[in-house]
Amino acid sequence: MTGCAGPFPQSTLSPHSDFGRAIDGVFTGIFWWAAGVFVVVEALLIVALIRFRHREGRPAPKPTHGHTVLEVAWTLAPAVILVFVAVPTVRTIFATAGEAAPDALKVEVIGHQWWWEYKYPDLGIVTANEMHLPVGTPVEVSITSADVIHSFWAPALGGKRDAIPGHVNRIAFRAEAAGDYAGQCAEFCGASHANMRLRVLVEPDAAFQGWVETERAGPAVPAKGSLAERGKAVFSRNACLGCHTIQGVSPGIIGPNLTHVGSRTTLAGGMFPNDSAHLASWIADAPSLKPGSLMTRMKPPLTDADIAAVIAYLQSLK
Ligand code: CUA
Image (cartoon, rainbow, N blue to C red; front, side, top):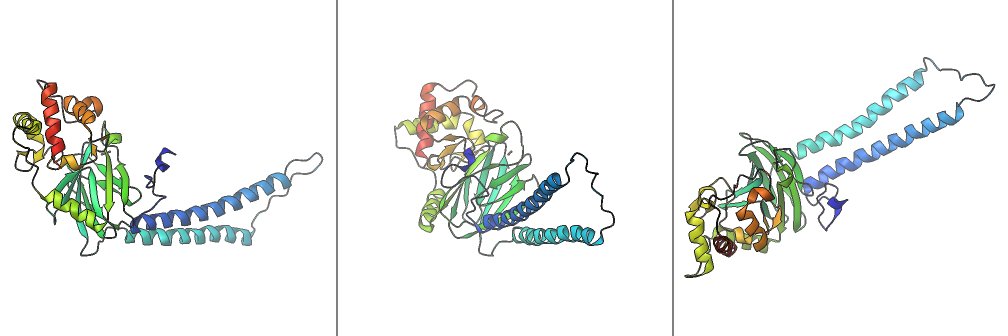
């Protein structure tokens, strides 16, 4: 029930893309066939229970053997129903196999323990956890993994597709309504599988173009003497730079790209809102918030003043 909350519930029963509606159509068709079978079978069962139940002084009902018409009927009827189930199912399997329009926007998804990396090869953008898409535009999502098998799934839009190391799976879809779509990893992938969430932010064209411009620009440069500038220095002399890319500042590629982390709404694979309090706890001790997090505790730990400076810097990276 909690999954049904909000205007864009994390549910395949609330489809907002061509892919989502195709899956929903198969589900609805099969549901009604199954409902029909249930009603007929239960009705026959109830009739049999009442009509043939034991009564004092009555002989046992006579069994029927070799009733050709009955036997042909109960073989043919399920076969016909299975055809009505199989044809739309197979048709949908082919329709959702990942063939995209040639002009589709390409997005590469790379699953990591436990966050999502997104690359837009034609736009030169690398980001994490929050995928931005323009509404009404065909997109082709290529999915792979950097470590173990994950599964990319934003139920209202389409999927799910496994993210397999050394292999690329594809989905193609067209989001039909702007909105903030929740999703998550759908394949058990270790201690924080349940904490590997994602968001797909589907935006009108102008908003999407604005986001593209922001992402393609270099990182913000903090003002001289500001707390953010101190934070940049702290970031650059600690382990942060070994794992995170900030364009022109640090080259790490193990963790999420932070060039525009200040513009993201969530942290840590969609677990927390991107605010000062959560950033502070995260930087100080990530594994206590997210079991198994590869972002270990800093040794020696950063001082509170250093953490505050790093937060100011990260928040300035809009
Ligand atoms: Cu990644 Cu489960």
